Image (tube, rainbow, N blue to C red; front, side, top):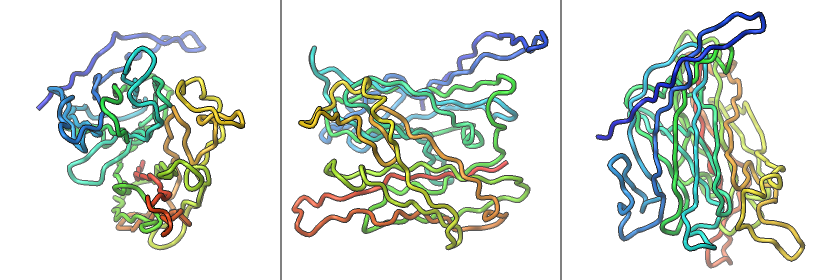
Length: 334
């Protein structure tokens, strides 16, 4: 079983506005994935395995393990993610399309927990930093991690994932005392299966309970719903609606410089610029934390996530194109 190492950087000092010197440890960095290759190779999915990471799903998922210390108090936990397309020749890369992906934790005793949702750019390298402090109670001890890119070429992308722990005073949220994955349906939600349900048990003694939600809409043929026409996402607790929203991003044009291979259409528009259902090519989709404490008192509850009016596959479409949603949730408490 592979071993992961914690990098302890030197002690630093902070100077407050009153001139008081406060001791502060520099960030601790744990390398989760280092230069792993994501690909789609049905006849040899393990060709890019390393001593520290192994493939499944025809090479589109890489798995590894890490030993993490327990954390309490303040400070932050960050995921640093780097995505690099693999060159094909001096002018091209193997995968020039925007692809959905995630980094997730796979606990032994519960549902998978999505740490980062990302979309690759149209063939450009990107780096991201995402705050995952709300998942700190799960990110300790012996942990299994997976990284996925929905690619259909080989080789496709090089990926680095680091977990960074900071302890700077006054920065970030208080570390939760409890967290658990709730919803991560395989393949996402579609018109045939528009909702996913999870059973959760809230422990006693929590003062605040929130649900972290990540949702992005897509379609199999790259047109209309549910990628460019958003739909209502609905969260229900024990059958009662508690939260309704429409994920949407209208700032994708600001990221055009990250998308060197995006197409320009006859009307002068660029593929990367269009507004989308909760995502942009070349960016991450950050979790939204929603306070649901009034509905999640101690004890057992049923959480249901529904997306309304998902575009179905039409009978006259021989290829069966349709809309679908990638969704995930985690419940956290303080």
